[in-house]
Image (tube, rainbow, N blue to C red):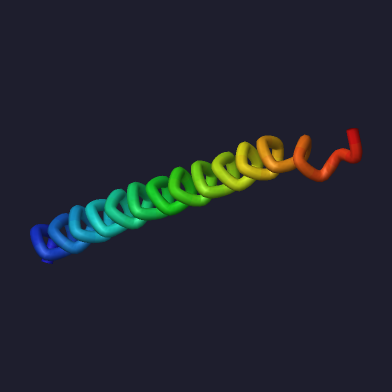
Length: 51
């Protein structure tokens, strides 16, 4: 009983860690996409100015 419980706990921890790394990777991808979009917008701004 105790061995089964520790095994399921270890599995739950492993799942949580994998989920955390997946979330972190998703956040990193989102942040890079947003940064890329901001850079593109900044680079495109002067062409819209009427100077």
